[in-house]
View 1 (cartoon, rainbow, N blue to C red):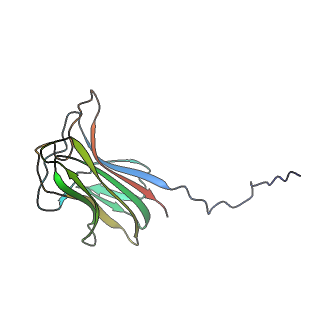
View 2: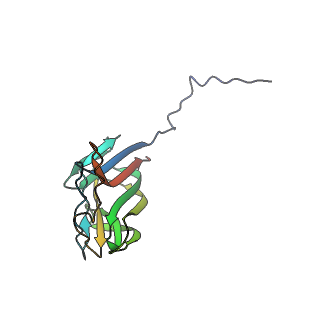
View 3: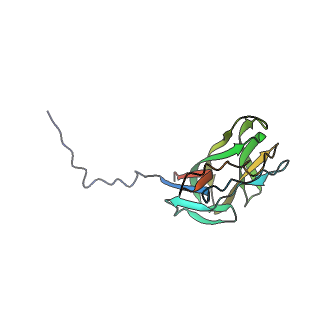
Length: 166
């Protein structure tokens, strides 16, 4: 027995495709990520958006504003020889920060490593955020990311992936 169902008249409004946007620090070829500020929480550069960005109300001066909703947020930030380092999602509207994972990158040896942050966040009104870091060491102009100098390609450092769940 084979039963076929016609779904053409079925209301499928409850099925939601999440929207995904990316906010990144994009620099010209052979431009490093910059020097680390040490001993205080400092902002990572955010200057480029792509993907489905309709739920991001603005991006200005490294601050992005999300409309009300529930989000899955993933952050990846490179560091070159920073010593102990942490990143956080800072709620600029309400002056509070959620600290992400710790990372250690030798201040004298080795190459670049990444600090990560992942969260589910519900905001009930437009809320402004930024990504901040706290580093123990400044290894120079490559501390926030070492340039790869691939011919004709931009350098990409901090990346924020935002998935609007509802």
